[in-house]
Image (cartoon, rainbow, N blue to C red; front, side, top):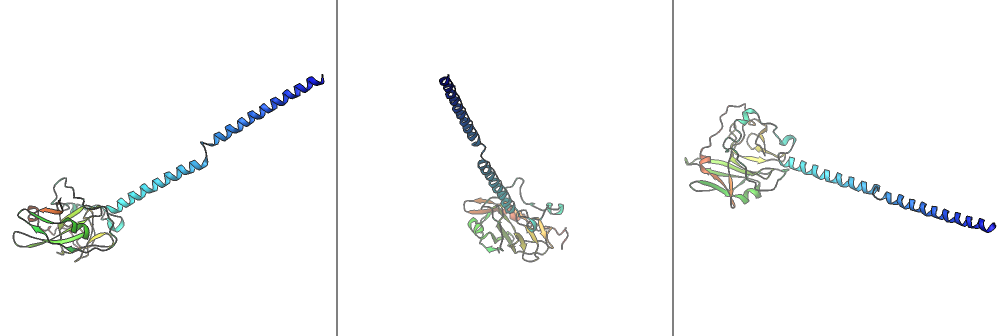
Length: 241
């Protein structure tokens, strides 16, 4: 009878060991469950998302600044008086040539003189001079013999503006890209948006400079003479001062 008792005790031990194995198996499943839900992985994913979001926001801000900036760099919405003359010589659907990468102007840039070449139909200037100097001034000799001051500059967007360098009310011919990122008349101090030409401040702010259509052909910026010959100053029909 004693021997039979030992066998049952031995069997009980085996069941206990099996229970231990099942417990061990349960422990293994618990550790395996931890894998997909590890806090470190969730933190890494959130970090990547935050970094990606910040990068996108930074890009948007940079492009916004390059396309006209903020605060003093913008002229807000053009008034109906300005809209009447903004782009009056530009054909419908005109797209300004892009000659450089977007840039932010944080220091003053004065006009650099360049020499224009004229033939029977066109006026042209070196594109490289405009890109290198950012803003240039040159003259067009009209059929009447009158010398017309003209300018070309690289907008914050990298696009090209070519126009007549003439501020109608004050008759100023010089312009400077100033440290506040605006185009400023050297004569009256009127500030205009570099990208849109809308007025920001100054006595002549309702009088945008006249932009003329231009193209880039090879290494030259070209303007048709017929367009320049058709130009005339804006009438003084808006408030001055």
